[in-house]
Image (cartoon, rainbow, N blue to C red; front, side, top):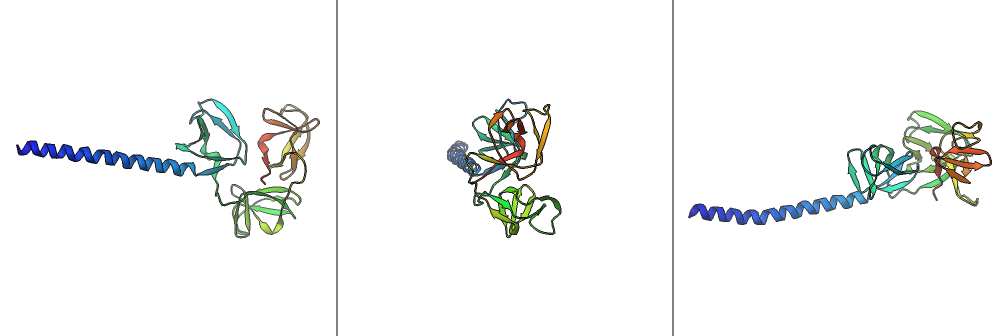
Length: 223
């Protein structure tokens, strides 16, 4: 009789405990999901969008450099940014929602450093008159892309008064007579130059008659 009563008590105890445990687990999962939805990232390079979390899945589109997306799920080194839309995590950088993204004009030649300090290594120079996008600010330093910082004293806020969508060239790039590397090189654009898109053909854009550049090296002007 004692054995029977002990077994009954144990069954009642587990029948109460298990649903409570399951409910808590479900709530924790929901909470993690909601936290993921709040995470906003910026593309630091052109990224292929695939139907699943691997390169074996079909490519269904791409994210342009500078695009912002929300991450809803993480799986290994892949992020889900929509229904059946996955991108490789290494090409996304978490964005602080409080940061105001805006374009600046360089007022004189300016050194580019790996961190927000004159003690950080110099990795390049942006010439006077160039345009840059600001993605983060620390004291008097502006981050213009991943691990690239400039001193804000030599920047002034830029307002695009020209008609039509304009883009900033993010790296020195060859200008070609047609939409392919097979076409003749007819010039060069420098980082910070401003271009207008007249036509798109695959990953190439026409910026003028007989002048094409790869879209991998341009970035929208954030307003």
